[in-house]
Length: 232
Image (cartoon, rainbow, N blue to C red; front, side, top):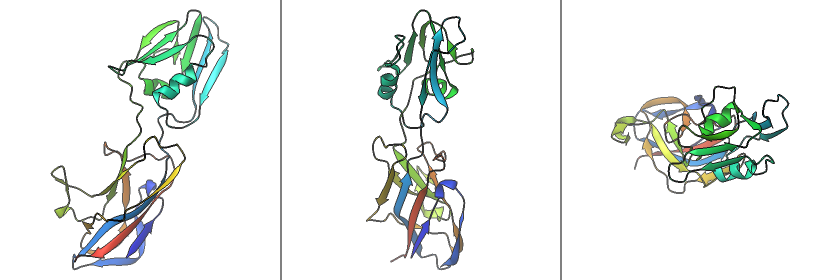
């Protein structure tokens, strides 16, 4: 028995046209296939970096950031194109970012850039000439796995780290995925878990990251195919 659930990134329960009869409690469920479009990012829309001469209000240049997954080397390459001799570096030992604004210039970072680079600022994002070090280590890593939860699991026999859990499967994410790319993962060998007993009239799948927070896929679709089998 197969059930295809689309747009599970919305986190809503999907009603079934025909309820699943598990009164005998002998049904198991596994993830057969997942298709996802990479919609998570560390830099969202409306982010930009701007500069102007010190004491002036007229902006001389701006670099806009399109939504996507940005590594630190990619950021450094973008900033290296700025003609005012601005530099951004990261300490490989403590992962703190270091920004140097050249004499005679001011630079502006939008809120998302400030948050990702961990620079504290109380001047509406503007930095005068000088050297600045981030308050906390910078971590631009993207998720390495998707954790697929099925609310209708029987947690009596499903434990994760010693506690009952509705975790169905962990789906590894290809390294450095491209924002907007689509990938399908098929599981030839099912990891089967017990389905909850009685009549199951809906199925609810939730995709979370390694922190157990719901993965914000920014409206990009995630679909799954669940396979249900009788216990042998």
